[in-house]
Image (tube, rainbow, N blue to C red; front, top):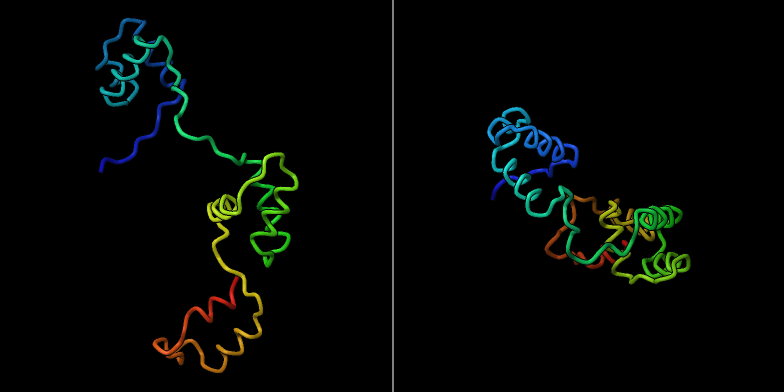
Length: 152
């Protein structure tokens, strides 16, 4: 798979168009701007075809949560990390006109880095681990679901 390339900024595209209007040829523009020749020709063809250098609007569904909503959601979670997801969603939806689903909140929190789980009752978990220790646990006989149930 080819490496991802970054888009040219509007000022770079304007510079390419200005150099072309000044009479420079494609290879000369490529040498001066240090961009590949196909990129130069792509920008020039777009300018000739559309008359504009701006990108078209992106296709696809727009994000439901704005950056401000995301910050508010993170603040809500940081106030009480042990709060269940359905409560976080309910508190978050109180301040919004259009409610979002629990799954949307969960997905956004994961994107924001809230991936680790918080122990519900740490004393119970620590007690079991202190008796056996991580190395003393027989993982074939142990049900991992029991440990995960102790975690949120």
